[in-house]
Image (tube, rainbow, N blue to C red; front, side):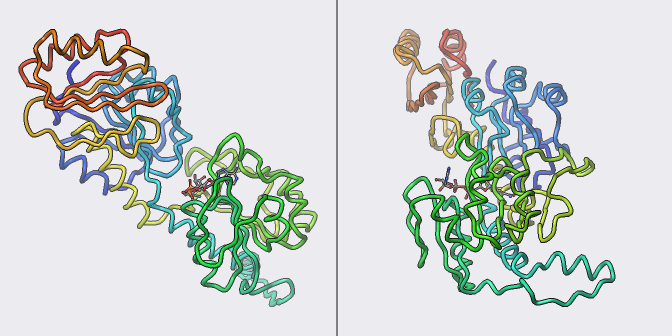
Length: 406
Ligand code: NAI
């Protein structure tokens, strides 16, 4: 099937994605349908026929089964930072690039972390709750300034480094631990091991991705290394902290407080109940995964991912995709553009070029980019032959997805 004419491309946007994304789609004549909630696997499969672009946030799981039942799907936009809700490698093998917004909500998370460092040090949420309940408990015991205290940042990437800048502005000493070498900003000092950081910090804040290595990165033994009376913040991913171990460290008084925004199991929607051992514990701030949830961030994410998806639909550009060979191509001015995703095995280009030369096709430009599993070929062609070529190339056993832009 040739790629549908531009006005027939349909985008399905779930989970209340910011309307700023619509501008990019509508500007390109892409039809937008919205659904305010996440969809479960079967509901999603039922909605995907005829949908070329899918927009999700963190709640919708795009599983292998979803991908195998979505023959029309061309691209996915994850309107958030994390992309672990998508079966990424399988999406690539199905010829579907996945785009995200790596920096749009960085500052929102960093600001919340700083506010919670102060709130924990002052037991602010407990005092506020007491006053709401009509209790007047004016206390200074175990309440502190953050100036001069040590903030340990685990994962010194986009968010971690912003947190460090803001913390130093408050007069905090900042130390970091990261598995890769990073450039320290300001007076920040890197520690060689996680244990060193845990041992030396008054506050530990986690900003690592969800990976097999970060699962339960902070468990019973790591909490035991932290000094008595210190605080833990996790606004990264729920799997990074062993929740029963954290609850026990709070109950025993070993930790003086914690702030948690992300959980191993999170409710699918705002009407579902939330269960956690952390509920009701003293000086524990619990928020519903709102670290990056600000108007500014949502608008920026909507724009950034919307532009990437629309550009992919319009030109075939995959720059910025998290799971796919990267190609940046200018809009097509004349002729036709053939886009071919194929299994990255020897001989593919030879087979494709043979088909092209057998048809005396006039190639205006050709770009190939590959990664371990898939190759992505962009060919600008004389418009008289592109549809025939598409059919022949699509029939190659190595071809995964082949479409034409006009
Ligand atoms: P990033 O990729 O810029 O930084 C992550 C850093 O962690 C990298 O420097 C990486 O080398 C480091 N790292 C990876 N594995 C590590 C390990 N085992 N030990 C120490 N360091 C390790 O990511 P970014 O943008 O700073 O995001 C960080 C986390 O925040 C992600 O998990 C993301 O999903 C989460 N996040 C949460 C939000 C919320 O609403 N609560 C909003 C936005 C992001």
